[in-house]
Image (tube, rainbow, N blue to C red; front, side, top):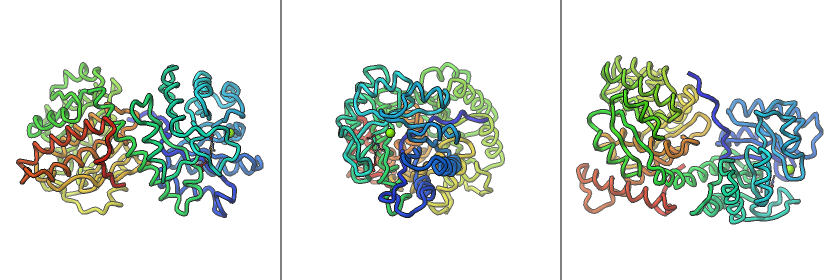
Length: 498
Ligand code: 3NM
Ligand code: MG
């Protein structure tokens, strides 16, 4: 089944600059390619002065590249170039063509972004049908000398608030101007600080990437800041929504999974009877299909529930426990993968390899593989691309990938492997995060994996924890208190490795 194309992701938004002062003597397309490898999610080609034929030629090369990465290409100002190249849209400033004129030229389906430096401009752009806004100038910058007002993070926040009050809270927004790897985390924290009306969807940069010695590494850093900034937003959304976490799971973990769901702020229901799924799918939650104990009856129930959640447009987390262990499980997972769409597929290396079609021998349902981290990242990204999903590949380092963006989360503790059901309850945790933050299942999964792993780290440090038995209650306590603190924006505990 083919999923609808994902909405544009403005998280790490690259604006290009071809001037020698910023690009140097490098080839723009090569620099953008490196940036895309590092995790850039949206590219705006900005060349105010180049000759039309040159700009069109470069735009075509950039478009071939961004299409390979599944990332939108927008053209700054030069609407005719966008129309000629057929790329995904345009970005216009207050001094450029107005939105109505531009819309007539590019058509309904293209993206139109608009720069705004105050609430009036932002609201007018939204009313005119802008698809997203660039808010700035945040800090003065050598990249654009004719900037009008320097508004800082507080100015960005005021515009976001005005957008929500005017009923345009759903229009994505990024900020621009002087954002660097040194200040991105602070800008995001200040802009999104509680009570934030609406968080930023990303940051737009020119020199932080184009002028960097290593554009891929610079993009990777920025992507890390975006992910860390998303964690309190995701966990806070769980706390506010108390989303249903519907678990179709195995006998061993039902109680533990329900307690984990409660600890992270979700509302668990453990129901393996799929006739209920159509009603439950209407409640705004997410479904966990955990194939820990596969039976013919169970498989029929999974299939019915998956259809119900897909029909309702609600996310499903697939946990193909022991996928490669037996012929029965291989066949069952193949059947399920062909049948439905999944927001996240979570598994250890052997399970993910099995789903990808690598023949593996798996002992029991425990993880045994020895793949290196780059090999794991490649595997996760490949499976994610094939099924248009997010893959969470668990291990001492968790890998989370949507095929374009790949994160590693190094939180966790070996004690998680000495207790049954921690993998399964991670699936439950992810279901809560994705239910509350469906717009970006990748960052929701990163947030879930990070919070889960950090709770384990904190639990083992407690005096009373002497082994697996005392670990479990301590882990639940930490998960509970970390989720609450995170929802309130307290990130002091957070150690997220990129
Ligand atoms: N537009 P850097 S500031 C292209 O405020 C652009 O609208 C801005 O470059 C605006 O990331 C800007 O190198 C340049 O500071 C941003
Ligand atoms: Mg402009």
